[in-house]
Figure 1 (cartoon, rainbow, N blue to C red):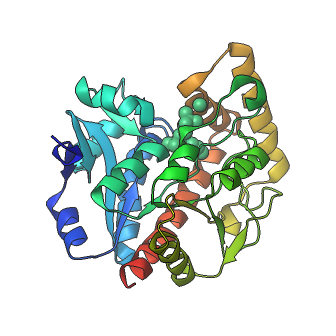
Figure 2: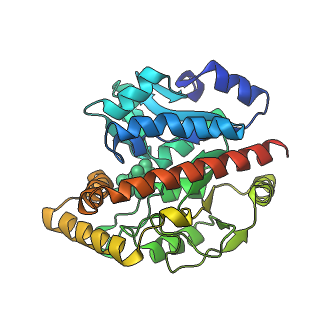
Length: 305
Ligand code: PSU
Ligand code: MN
């Protein structure tokens, strides 16, 4: 058997890929572990509609029934949003969950792996995982970063939250040769805010330019992905001090409770949402929609090259 025997691609996506049409991958950890029900289900449908509205085909990924799913039907989306005991699959978990028939949500790392296997080159998410604060002691660095180093997929995100050490995350990406492109901005965005205080390496002025840079890197045989930092629209950007206060508190709580490993990111996301009385969720939805829109534009431009 090969990886293809584990891939289950919907006929619509398969046809689009065969015909070289634009397809945008979406992850399911953002649904199962990043947002509450039923907001996550509404989001799951709407983000797909936005991609279709732009002229691309959405491909939400998950691990279900021993298969790597590319494209989920309504029932499968509901399962990922509402289901209890949905696992979270990063790279190390994939073979285990496939072989043991567990339902698992895909992280950025796993979604990149599956997208690559299917031949999808553009992926929209909210925020990427990265180097956690205090990683100097905990060694907690998301597998997302190694996936970006190795797998040829362009990830459109609103940067990363300051639950992470953003400076160290950018250093890590530099070491592993991952280009960080601002989408028409010089600033690396910080998820809820449009400015993390760090600059990007390059300001890519539009989708066409991003697509050309992608093609050039891969034409050269340079393996690995891209981060496109797409800032949250101004009207939804949160006050920096307010959100950072909540984030600092959540990080402190995680430390006190001894939360570690794969539970860390979901714990921090849920705690921040509670501490902001749900305000952070509204911003989260909007930035992810905006990423889906830009990812679609990039996929369309890339499909023309
Ligand atoms: N950051 C967010 N929202 C998310 C995640 C990260 O702002 O939903 C999810 C993504 O799926 C990401 C994963 O790939 O968490 C990273 O988890 P970990 O740090 O355990 O690798
Ligand atoms: Mn981790």
